[in-house]
Image 1 (cartoon, helix red, strand yellow):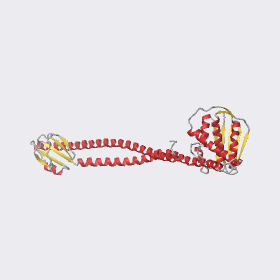
Image 2 (cartoon, helix red, strand yellow):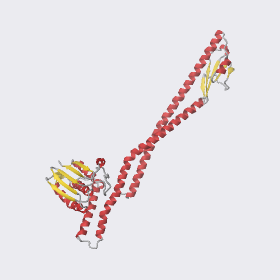
Image 3 (cartoon, helix red, strand yellow):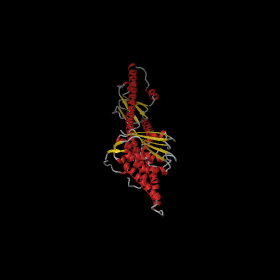
Image 4 (cartoon, one colour):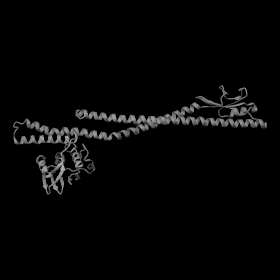
Length: 394
């Protein structure tokens, strides 16, 4: 991916974000749909079965009550009007003789007397033969209509609820996906800013080099110094990128180093950089510090802290590098770091201010080195007043 041009890299990352979002939504909504479709089907089966059972029980109960009344009327020789029953019954009912001919009936359909109960999509038929021929009635037939309407209404309600729940889950899924992809978007924005900032950061020393090479008098002290500083800046940028991102992991030579000496070596270049920005840089050596670490890691650590102190300082500002009791203290009078941003300063690509250029890698490198070698690191910063970094070497 690193071999892609920067613009293509950003486009690639945007496409990856969208693809990840789409995959999440498809997986979430697909699995949710299958789950709720199964639940809806089981609910439909349960409700329809319960409806049939309930309706059948009611029909059987009505038939039993009528059968009891017919038998009682016949045994007690009391009058009983089958016509009144048919006319007043809420639904369709019929009374049939032993030849299955209707005595009185509101049922128009042909009845299958070989079955005690049967149903189709539109109706349910109950055939009750518990009258035993009393009052000439051999069979009581009850027909229940409206079955299809109930089933259709049940299906419509289930489908409506399923769609409503699915739409709700889609909405929730969309916001969850946005929440899920938000960190990826933030990293992509940081990388996008890094690409822009790195182009700008490299442009300054490269432009200075080109102008110096095209100068009429190439070997003047001022021109040579400009070339040296520009080349050194490009070299430091390359070293930072190589140390943190582009270089394959390799075994580093860890040895006990005299840190005072390395600091003085680095300050020969950093002092010139500070002067160029009209910032005074002083070194205070109160103690000698020895520590086991590979040289390149310590140089990256020290260089990034001092470079940041120069870069984010004010015109006429001050920087003090102090060696005291196994501590390296770097204090500046710069712009400082806002309190709400202090918790994120060690994150890769993070920049607490947009006032000056930078990669957002320096303090990430510092934190990485401190973690790897057990170096204690603390800082205090007040916006508009400055920052102090304290490194403890034990």
